[in-house]
Length: 468
RNA sequence: GGCGCGAUAGCCAAGUGGUAAGGCACGGGUCUGCAACACCCUUAUCACCGGUUCAAAUCCGGUUCGCGCCUCCA
Image 1 (cartoon, rainbow, N blue to C red):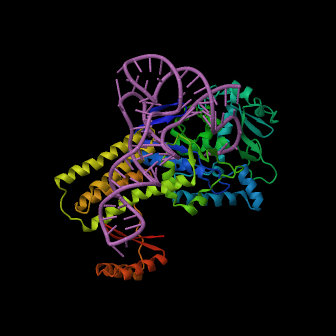
Image 2: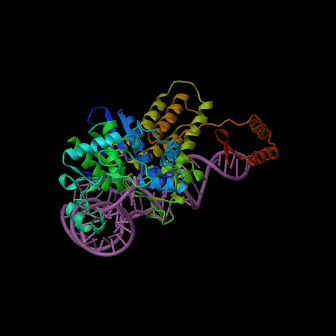
Image 3: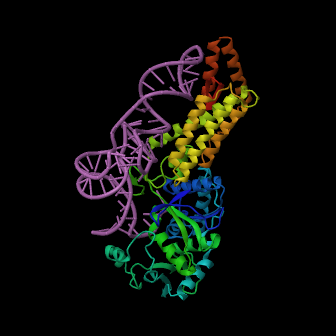
């Protein structure tokens, strides 16, 4: 399995620290509102990475935090006249609902920044002791110059950064030794939540949170650290600086970053008015469609969001689901006999698509190619499997489609809903009428059911229905 | 100013040296009492110019266009 490592800028063979086990940290959202569809991309992408690794037999320890103390949360709390905690708890719950609807599995651990303050104070203390941090009137800064590998992830040159960015130099933070030094601990302002520390009553800087939670739940050296590409600098760069200076070990061995989700080829932003929450999208689409859409492109390529593309994704996903559903209907009339010789060949051909699927995923999680393999399997099934086949063949092919989709977190088998008895009776009556060539009555029943929101489909495999 | 990415059919999107996967839409067909659904078939020489090579979408140089990061941000 090859993964693209942002730090080395190349695809590398993935080898975990401990054979058979993977430790993985994904930076999670700051919970000050419903998550937006941009937040959803890393969630879906790295959940898929996790699922694929498990498919390959790895035991994955997957940690993803919620940042539950932050300026934006405090601002929102003040706006509503409630506590910051109330805001963060509310949106963590909402976020979990969205994740479930996108079929993003809960992490092994979802740490909260506010529950890890002790660890942060400890790490900051160690950094001060080792000379990597300094306290100025209650604010603790990281001494960037002291860490000679600073910039190794984002491939930035410190001198360029200092020279090229005026704003860093004129922010009025004269107390910093160097404009690139960043905050580890800051004193509270009036009305803000705070914790007591050796330096001041205050709260941690954003970057230290992830360093501490990663260390606590995964260890000082981990396999994979992932997140959106915008986090490369400064967030992940700073995490490396803090962790490696504190622990004296390599922080993470593989750095994975997803590209942005754009809208109308522009970055999503509130000022442009092209901002969508996952919740809004869920009102219009099954979030499985969103997941399918996100996986239809490579995770390192920018992806453009639009209603047209969602429609296309919905139709494409429907094609897979129809195939699975058709196979299921075929099962009803199929024989229980053993696989015939010809069927063994058919099954073998069908299984070959899993190899293609795995090869695609092995190549830095090429989900677009993996989905193509699923479609090839679907086409193969549609063309080669009929109700004349045995149950063993039909169910084996159907299960294979479901399995490959499940690795991507896509639910191919839609649960069958039970209809009310009277509706079932009407359907039966219509079938009888059709048989008796009483089409007037048959159409009447069809119209009646349509009014109740049920569309009937007379397929080769029998009568199907779906809700409007 | 510094660093980096991209340009493949109407749309989306794989493909990093040997003559272009897959999906959506369009068109054609099969099935069906009809309709709808479903299914099958069909659709490109890869932004432009020059170079390397027996061979390039794929490597090198240049041009044009688009985008990202350098500041909170997934």
